[in-house]
Amino acid sequence: MHVPISLAKIQFIALCDTDSQVTIMNENTYRSIKSQPLYPSQIIFAGIGRDKMKTIGFFHDSIAIQDITLSPNIHVVNNNLIHLDMIVGMDCLRKTEFTFGKNGIQLRKKFHDILMHIINDFDDTNPVDDPSHVVN
Image (cartoon, rainbow, N blue to C red; front, side, top):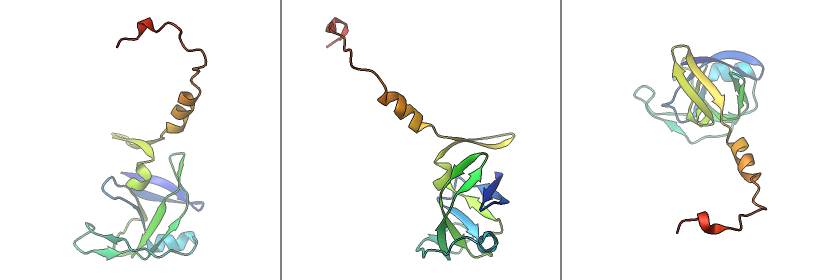
């Protein structure tokens, strides 16, 4: 499913791909956002066409998708490898709760932090003195 995303105050369309393990951007898009320099990468992609391709490198930045901000490592590949601006992979999607429906993909932020806060606030300072309700 295609979604509008924002990166470095630039809007473009990305493909959300549950079959891609990492987030990928083509070189033209990388140059257009004027991001920081690339870090070297040893990742080799297989499954995009028949050839195995190595990334040019990667950078770390924040992307906004449907009011959710994520901070993935974004791997840059040659333009001939993908014609899309960007593919959002499972490294990002795993941090959300997403559903696919007739209106496209819907993303929501996971709320594990809130749940942990509720668990930590549980009041156990007044334990029950009568353990008769406990079954052995």
